[in-house]
Amino acid sequence: MYIKVDHEGESVSAFQSCILCTSGLDAGTVRVTVKAEVHAAIELEEKIKVRSATLMWGYLNKEMRFSSNTCKSLMESFDIDAAALASHSVYNVNARLVVAEFMD
Image (cartoon, rainbow, N blue to C red; front, side, top):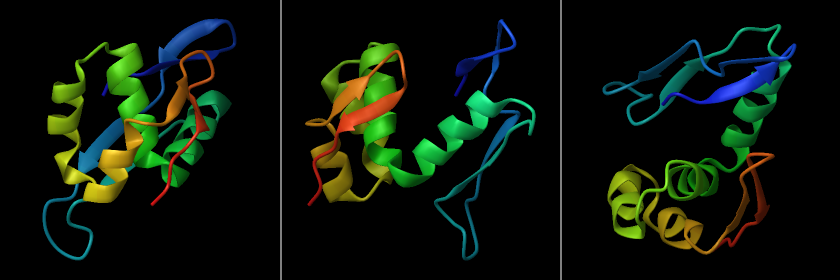
């Protein structure tokens, strides 16, 4: 995932690394590293921790401009209810923020 954020007037990569855990107790999770001095990346990471399915849907659908079917396919790894309801959420592209989230 190549997401850029603004830092001191520059557009920089939000994440240093995204590592998918495929086995063990953390299987199905992702470890993300960010630079401590890039506050926008830390804010984005905190938003993702709280609303990962809805933020991912908004990013794929609004920013990457993927079709609804492609988004659904890519989100199969999320909880099925969260993924299904994510498509009904309202995503603010400029702030990378879920404005209205539908929960089960």
